[in-house]
Length: 235
Image (cartoon, rainbow, N blue to C red; front, side, top):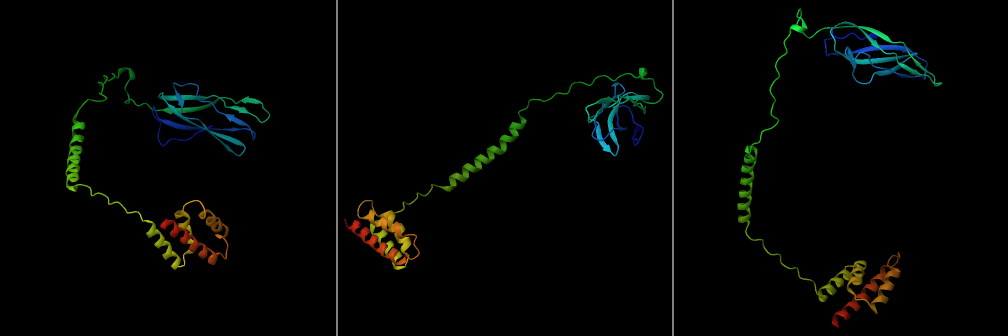
């Protein structure tokens, strides 16, 4: 076993690392145990266990509590072999020299403990924070009210006139004149009322809409649909 040397001599309450190496077969499980005397040292966290060649390195991080020179006993680690056999290794011993935090050449019993400090109030009730917050809130509300009044009344929205039958027929004519037969047919399907003969016209449109050479026939159907829309508008 070896102890990693601290940067300076540890004092009561300090933490230090003690390293212990044990030879165990490959595949064995090593379970370390902490110091037995908790008044001398206590384990800080879980020991770090690492395989190094044919041995296992166990690093104990401990906190020391008793000043003077001591023999720290670390209980032997438990080894579980691959065959299932369980062994307990011998205890390990390490010599620790811990310095006291008390002044030198002073007997501990002669030191008089200091009196307890008074309780510190957790919180005190005060309306000052609320008053500080209310001032900017009131200023913002007054400014928003003045700005709202200066806006004046909201202008009413002018109603949008809906195009009548004559305007819709004229729009379809312009699309046909521009060669947009597909666009004209799409709108005619929406504008024409259901029933005969428009149902038959819609069936013929669906039959040729996605054909490659449907341009001329689709233009002819658009003109037929326009005639049906004009006749429906006259009625």
